Image (tube, rainbow, N blue to C red):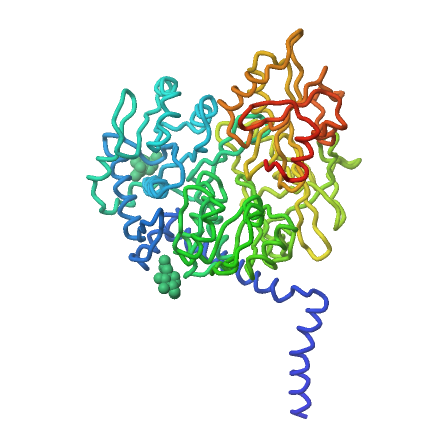
Length: 619
Ligand SMILES: *[C@@H]1O[C@H](CO)[C@@H](O)[C@H](O)[C@H]1NC(C)=O
Ligand SMILES: *[C@@H]1O[C@H](CO)[C@@H](O)[C@H](O)[C@H]1NC(C)=O
């Protein structure tokens, strides 16, 4: 009898998991992920209790391993203790009566990737200030706009960006913004250099009392995202959101002894949230790079024993496009975390560089939802998980791409798409998944919200992304709606580009959109223009203007001159037809121009077109 029972139990131990496995081959990975989610939830809870800021996570690691390298930059290594000391020095100078920054102030950072960036952010966190992370490529009007929209009172800049600051200095001073350079440069009218003061300041810890009023709902950062209105919007990031984002590395299975290679700009969410904050949360070492370099990438990985790299899709393709070498598999990289890798690049990357786990993630800077492809299924940006869906409900709803609006049924509610079909991702706004919105931009904040989506009175965040979820729960990216497109990992706001084109004398109207180019992720910029009466297209003036005012990724690569712009019945510019037609001179009879890096805008010939589509010209 006893034996019978034991046999039965043993059989059960085999059969139940087997049954579960046959129904869902990912059941064990799903359960494993559930454990990690729950653990992350508990961690978040206890972290908030001990300190409502990333400072807490950082100081915990300083205590745990003061002598472990935290940041390695250009062959100089800084330990956790040194990082703590350097950030204390900066915090002391900033809070001294000389600069006078205090809790609740917003300070704008205008630096490229370098250790000072990290120390300054830590300093501001320690003072309970919000850091506005300016894109180091922006200039002129955009720079002023970004400073104004977060109410920054102080601008901290790197010495190498002094020129860009001087260009707008009169306006800055007029707005009451004080300007400091973080290194040993020479002072000039209106600009002071803090290098010496920082050198001389004490490394002693600052009183936590300085940030006593900071709560998890206080602003920790402003991160700029391109939006539908043109000029960038400042997404307000709370301490809560930052701490949640820092747990991503735990969810992706990053270990305490990993070494991270970080070259993504720290002013972007992926570099800052996942890279810097993720590393701080795990207490790992960061190999920080000014920027990405194809030729240095694998050498660096070998030199520093890198185990984790962060990516955006384009980077993975650049790496695959390099000539093969015999050392391609000689490295210790075990995982790549990022977003936007195409399925073909993914397979090619694994084949070429060996068994590297690709952890593809999805999320928006200001969004209240994210996915992680914790299974590693090629091509998917994430996998649904019942716990996540329970905690933060979301839906894919039917969307009319021509009318650019969600489809509603006779009762006025949105309609969820069946499994396997493409729909617009919307996620429920709740206490657990709040949507904070943009600083000083109520209108844009409201535009990202949808009401009465599935039931009367509900409120959802509109992600602007069209996704597809298959029967096994894998999530696939399809397209992005609205007035932005992505190129080289940057969002380009079409109206911002159009605004600039309209400043060129010959241009009457401008319609900007992104077109696909074979072999490239994302879309490259193209503009359809109409010209003022009786003038010709001034290619030199147009080139000079876009070169002066737009970062390279936002400059229209192609220009199409039209007699009249096509508009919809509601006078919205028609884009979908133009996007569809692309830039093929064999099909389009309108004059087309191509932006040649050395010559500016030149007529787009069939020969140039073929070279681009066949990959002889790389964009
Ligand atoms: C915190 O806020 C209260 C009320 O606004 C204020 O009286 C107090 O001085 C603040 N404390 C600090 C340390 O700034
Ligand atoms: C990388 O690992 C090897 C072998 O464990 C070690 O000898 C070397 O010092 C390490 N390099 C660095 C930069 O830590």
